[in-house]
Length: 368
Ligand SMILES: [Fe+2]
Ligand SMILES: [Fe+2]
Image 1 (cartoon, rainbow, N blue to C red):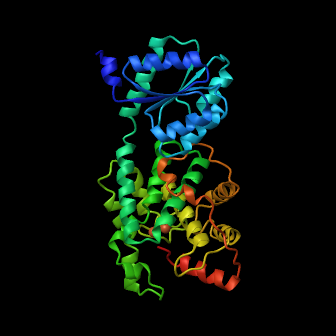
Image 2 (cartoon, rainbow, N blue to C red):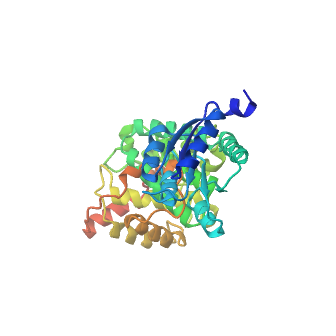
Image 3 (tube, protein in one colour):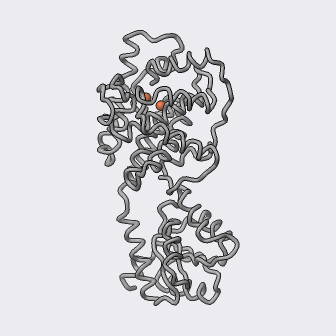
């Protein structure tokens, strides 16, 4: 067995190719090199096969029928199971626009037909090696999810909140231009923003009556505890500041460090907005949910005191895109997609001004 075949033996490759001659030739050449191959002739069956078999790599003809190849790649990138799967696109079209379109849709590489079989195999090996070396975020991601599960097990009210606001936060982060590792970090930081609540007694977390000064002091320790819990993670350098500072306020009156304006890490300012919005529109066991319009009005009112005034309008813009079902400008990181099935927040309109004021006061007074 050659070194390349030994390297290939554990990998599964999906081929979605409409041209039967090319499909058979690709299958044979990959199988001869030790890969296990799933070959499909059209986009719709191809997408189904990818979901069913979870291949390590996809070779995709850009001319496949029944589901546009660009749309197929976009869907794979939005699905946490396939978001990092290498996709090598095959095309006969030499125009750079076509190749750029494929790369922008999320393909990792574009190979022109007719291709040299040895070169194609070399590109497959290279893409798989890159994936294996790949982001150390994958083990970190698993650890983040485990920690997130731990805090949800403690306080089930946090489950949908953390998952949903991670998506909102990542949408805003992408909207302000964050990409790659920075975008992953915002999603992870959002998912774990309240992980320090593991250390807070449950009756205190759910207390409806006003908290005593001592109880507030205990509750306000959760950002610091959360940042320390995450200390051993590979990604701690990036996510601990988000967790520690998610209750800071733009005017410096927040906690734990009383940071103000741009002293507050950008990721923490983003998470603070997504957190506030989600708390308002989804409510809490002790707080009625607010309408989208009421929550937006409150964010506007607090721009420059509680929230970064430059981020508030951007958050509102992006939230309106989410509500309208407009997809993200770039693929969302896996940590942002855990609550994707929640899709749209069921907004119960309730604009009673007195009640709104009570909710806002309770929240602004130290929502934890
Ligand atoms: Fe929160
Ligand atoms: Fe918090």
